[in-house]
Image (cartoon, rainbow, N blue to C red; front, side, top):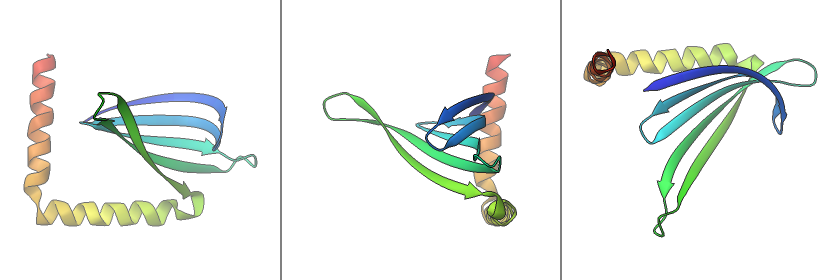
Length: 110
């Protein structure tokens, strides 16, 4: 899984974009976009984009988006951390496989 971060300000449909982070994970890319309202409150949009091929050979991207507002940041973060900790304890091999794959990727880049 790779990631990149960029900072930019543009007017878009869902508020002024402050920062974006793209995380590529196989056929999926996750976008974490920090946006600002007109009142200068921040909110987060999380988008999953999946690359799909149509039978005719054309490529389309299936996107799903959620909006996370400032009043929910802490609860969302706590909930996410709790479920990841549970998975890490119940299925440590999931994380070991990912860590080995990342180590191999880094080693091949050197």
